[in-house]
Each structure stands twice: as structure tokens, then as C-alpha cells.
Amino acid sequence: MVNRPDARRRSEKSRRAIYDAALSLVGEVGYPRTTVEGIAARAGVGKQTIYRWWPSKADVLLEAFLDLGERVAEEAGQQPYRIPDTGDLAADLKAVLRATVDELLDPRFEAPSRALAAEGLVNEQLGRAFVAKLLEPQLQLYVERLRSAQEAGQVRAGVDPRIALELFVSPLAQRWLQRTGEISHTYTDTLVDYALHGLAPR
Image (tube, rainbow, N blue to C red; front, side):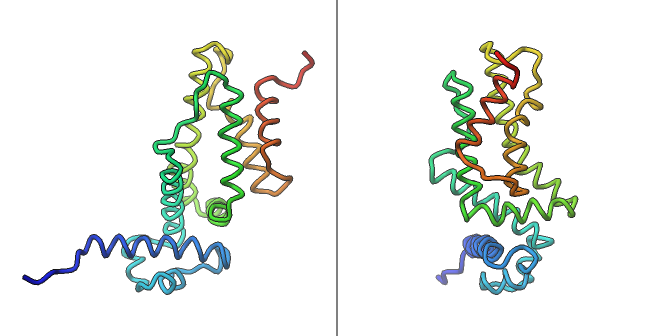
């Protein structure tokens, strides 16, 4: 009996090589100079293989980035990930935002994150996919945690969690994207304190 190659295993091996090639290239040469041809050459596949699975380099990079996030979460034993609920809302928010800072400063994430964010501003289809597949699921975790805090009487009943989360998530994103200042654990801890306690004298 002849042992035939497992097509599924071969396809998965090629897909993984393409993910790794896309992420490494965008980190080395930046998004504008990353091409489908370059990804194919780095991955050791024909560019027709890439176009069979993805319509553009942006789509390759988005899927590769999502896969990277899943792999890192699995390695850290955080699958499925939830914002902790210890009963201390401030401590829980500070913990997850500190982890977010660490991820944003991780070279594995920073280059593809910036590339996707920048391209998403001019490529509406990619931008919508980036929000739907990556950002919105993460934001919903904050919504769930804030609703839990509302039920525990730690957040005012009339507060809209989807708006409230922007008090600490949006400033971090803006500072990181526009490089208007350093991002650090101290910075995100301060954002949480300001968001939860306000600016008025007490």
C-alpha cells in the first residue's frame, strides 16, 4: 500500500509558514514594503497558494496576527481569556491594562499591530474586519466586567459600560498609535484611577 501525503497536514504546514513569513517581514521591512511575493518567497510557497486563501497581503497579516494572539494566549494558559473578577474592579482593570501594555510593547505584536491599524484607516474593508475580529471581542470583555461591577454596586447603575470602557482603553490606544507619550503600567494605573474616581475634588 502506498502512503499518500496528507493534504491537510501539508496545507496546515504551508499556512503556518505563511503566517510566520508575513509577521516577520512586516517587522523587518514595514507594511508598505511587505508584498505577497515576499511572503511567498519567505514561506517557500508559490504566490498562487497565498491568493488561493487570501485576497491581499492585508488579509494575510490580519489572520496571521489573530493566530499569533491565540497561540500566545494558549501558551500562557489564558484560553478562553476573560478579564479577572476578583471583586476589586480597579485591581482587575489595572491587571488587564498592564498586560495590554506588555503586549503592545512586545516586538512580536507591535509591528503587525501598527501595520494593521494604519492600513485599516485607508482600507475600509480591512478596518471593519480588524474591528469585528479583534477589537470588538476584546472590548466586550470590558463590557462584561463593568456589568458585573454594576451588579455588585461598584459602578453607578445608569452608566453605559460600552462608553465607560473608552475612558481608559481609548487614551491608551491613542498614546500608543500616535506616540504622544510613553505607555507604561503607571500610566494605565492612573487612567483607571481617573476613570473610576473622576477629577473633581473629593
